[in-house]
Length: 503
Image (spheres, helix red, strand yellow):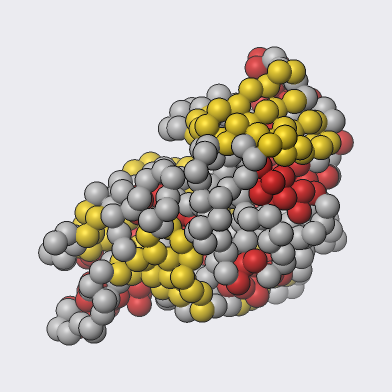
């Protein structure tokens, strides 16, 4: 309550003045800079969300996760290991160059051959050859059937870049998306503008500046005084009621698929023991955290997939809040309490984002109750994310975004996808899980695939290489001068494609 009253007082003071600004530029407040706007490389949330405005995949998908045309106006699969994509005519990159099949082949091959070091490369391990048959036809021949090729060729999962784009492409990215890159200042901002050559939708907005504001209270102040126009899923939940009462602001909300998780380094001697990870899960009161930190704007998560997904399995081992069970598991693992009441120390790395630091502080208190002393280490986001991707951590927490297909299990947990070849940052390895994932990727039988994924989710829920915490609701706070704001469950920024500024 004290924090809420302080915020209200600050907002009242902030309303007394406002800084001059370009009225035609929408200022979008984000917590951190994108790590890399080359769509072949950037896998953090900001890189993917801003990248989806700049780049297009060969295909897209609708609200029911069915694939729809994008840069490919149509495609066929004459046999299980051949895909033929027919590109749209007249599509141009932001610099005016025509898109051709050669660009598509270059984009994928640059990852497969290591011309750029990409965590996405393993997603194309099934590809044998890519042939640019003519300017508008590209043929993928596979080594084996791959049910996820379309997923890995879709907008948001990847983006087509011009042929010959090298390792410095991130400095001035060029795509075919509805917005085009203008500039980036690391840890300050990214600016994009309307792409008048867009083959799909031409946005109504002239320009969007993504301003990096790592402090959530400052972010709230910027919105209130009008120097910021919009923020999504980055504000303190206890500030929403205050902001909603401001006459110049509006709050939009929908159920979300963005998932918060807790990751472990399984190469660590303490965390190698599944009983320790299970005990940590039992020590965390997720319902209390959702009620307090999220103010109820979230739901506990049992899987990386959202409920209602065709492959979702909710009948899995559970480690709900149960401190007594946590104590027993730690005792069984041989970690008795010492004279000071602690059993052992663990270090948790976080970014300097306030929401993450608050979560870490709560976890510190809850784990401390069962004898685990959690030492917190906060870093600037780029440093934090670099440490996570190279495995320099014991514990960390991040959010998965845009999860729509079950290949997320392979990307995050298969032995073949150890970071940087994928996002298996825990270095978790389970031969049975690998076998199930391989079978599901190749089988044409939907019932068999569903059974594979059900067992995958049971294994992950038992072994806990990571703990799924909650699905966070998508909450957008925006200035009323920005209209037609329709948030998506994934928390993407694509609502900017239809948004307008009031006259």
